[in-house]
Image 1 (cartoon, rainbow, N blue to C red):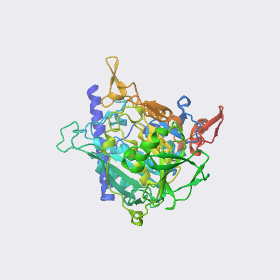
Image 2: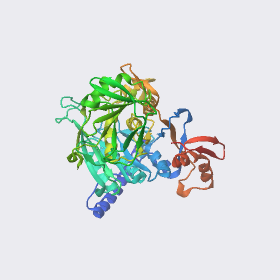
Image 3: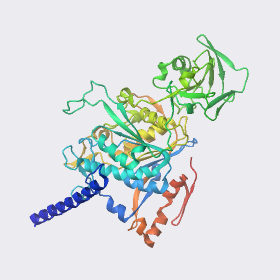
Length: 545
């Protein structure tokens, strides 16, 4: 009986292969040029075809801060299901998508839930480098999700995709098919490690770079101009109005610094113009990299608990103003102060120039380990890297930023960090992936999840959530330093299915159940996320920033 069952399975597979060959032959004849692969059915497809996807709120994981900042979205579940739901709530509403999908290296933990073998491999089959369907699995996986993702972008929206050389060429062809060749902008080369840092493996060529594909949704997108001083015209949007004529004067070195306390000045945000000022957060290399950063560290850093104090420092800067404004941090949650500078006095520096397609992020990639207060086993992206490309893409305010491969939560962290001077919202999706397996009646870390599991995380979504919570509420880093929280709020959702038919074939029972379960989807679509009343028959929500 066993032999007969085996032979029947082989026969069925051969018949399927022949059908796929005929399908591919037709596609090749029709298209002449393009990307062709065996489209392997994925486990979720049966549920997606026969049920209706919805979102359910996990209320005890909400984070609420009454600070006027946006409420962000974390979705636990398969990103295909989440993208289906977002196509109800956010179609045409997303400004920027950044994703860092599995690179399919053969050892990065990528697994595929092949619908044909789900009984034997309910958690999916691992995809080693020599697997005959390695690229087909990955392309089937990405194709379904990217097609849903494109529908979410605004006409002037943009998508960034991190990848390495294993799937770069396949991904480029796939994106040309989905987003169209005319919407391709660039493949950025990103230096991520030092030449002497040898990776495991026996490759004769050492990889020191990764890649970032950038596609616009349509010709409505306009990349930000880059000035010779690496700024953008849209950044010059601030004016400072002094409300008193006799401020206190403090000696700092050789400079007589005017001090304006809260209420003695007004900062006005207006339309971008080179007659205005731009605001620069004093952090990282800026602290020692220019005269303004060095002045702040020497004279103003020790006054950082004097919140929202404005300092007017004479004879500083090359913008021709004759002074520079510094402002201390807003509160304890904000880490750094800022300064305001005018546009370059040399008009030659106002000329916009192209961005390079190479960026050296080696130093920050090597220092990303404990960013956000959580461990992650490889692939963690620095927030400075993500912020850089969001700023290249757009200077618009109130952005909605989507990442449907949430991982360690870097995109969420970057959005929160940018919100010290912005009002953006993130939507992050992460599948609940286990970090362990059961062997000999005990838990053992899965390969590639050792650090996460040893830190007490049994599931990758727990890492994503913990990092967001850390960044919002504050945490102690690996050096024992207390990192203040950045505020903002969070709603946590899980994907679920209802009914016995999809939307197109829904019966009355399906519609009744959907009516009772659609509250979260409707509130997400309207961005009214705070539930104020719930019964068996209705839910009421109020607005949330």
